[in-house]
Image (cartoon, rainbow, N blue to C red; front, side):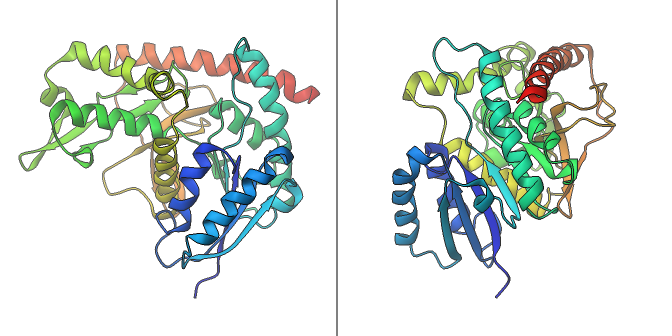
Length: 334
């Protein structure tokens, strides 16, 4: 039997984790023969609820799940980790400015970054889900200087999946027939869902999405705004934020880190912008199209950026730079 992979999920009593933990524990992410140890971290007032989650995981009687540890202590949670999925964050409350949200989250992700630095394996893969995900990821990365920057990524796979699904739905094809949509920039309403490089498998061959859809106004208008606003639309309908789809996207994101991307395909992931060829300033955590091999991502190169795309990419860059500046002011005093 292989050695167990040790996986931390923070915010483990929350609704995203409730959908996520079963997917991880039954083998959807690391493979059907990979034993797992799950470490569940949440704040002290949530420990009772977390106890119920542990009971349910035990009651699933899953063959791969070797141990479940529930804790409210970072030094216990971050010890010897192979993977850290940072879901827990301070949610935006009514009347809260984005600045207040950043300040609260800088404190959380500075502390968790420092705990990763001190207790986790240096090979740990860190996936940040809690919003504002890009800047929270940058904060954690900056607070864990002994862990390679490349080991940090944030989730824009949910947006990527949403974009894929919108196109598949429009063309009445299977979701897997749509490839190479891109989410550029921030996991916020300034993100740029880009269909200009996407292809769809139709009648035995790959066709550019723009040729298949034949509706430029939709691709540059409603398609983009639907993906950008989808999270808000789910909240308006459910009175709760996306959980099932977020959990599925986290599983997809980590699975691709572990097993790589299929030949000729790239996926969207928030990664550090250092040395990219798309004119995004260094030291931002920006969503790019990436290809993954041997657990290492590389930004997909050589994609032509037209004026429409450039404008959208610059807009989300501007927001990320402002977020970073605000966060780093707080980081120096946190």
